[in-house]
Length: 234
Image 1: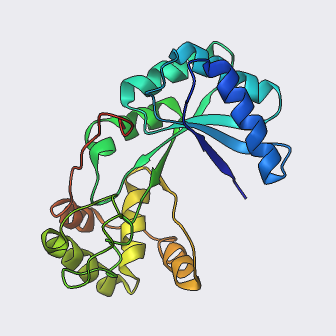
Image 2: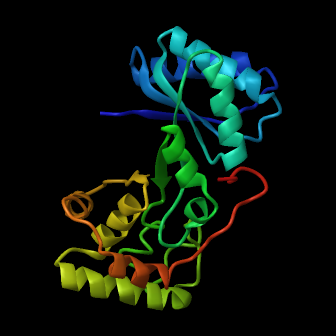
């Protein structure tokens, strides 16, 4: 089982913060190491080179097997990758929000850059916090604090309709179609599983691929999404 750790910088001493946070994480989880340690967001006040040095030290100390980033833009990701390369450490992953309702990483070249550089692009909020599953409707909207893919559900009716049509044609759930879409676009989805139905949706996305025509139908009702000034750069 892959365990992921995410850390936000609260100090200008990136080297110390990274090392201490990683050590505290493994201790709290009762582990000797984590498989991948992520630095979340490129807005820390320390330099990228210092952050990379701290990440590389975590690998050398055996606190993590690999390191990655989350919410990094294309330029920030390349800079971090280049800095880590000076220590002989590859950047393993960049985890960003990506779904039918936020295609920004695809449309702005981030996913392609990850593929070209051998970096795994992980998508979080792959189902836009259940907005793509059929669970929510204009009459039954999601909670206000569900901020990923946060569109008025009335604006998402065309998207829901296309996903539902393809799901019925395929004999799978809407969630399975949305996850398969991410896979086809080059993302490795991270999906929360809290009950058996969630697991079934994930399994239902495997072993087949959307056709080009089906992808075009979904693309036509998809959203580009946006970035934020503070942390969501990628």
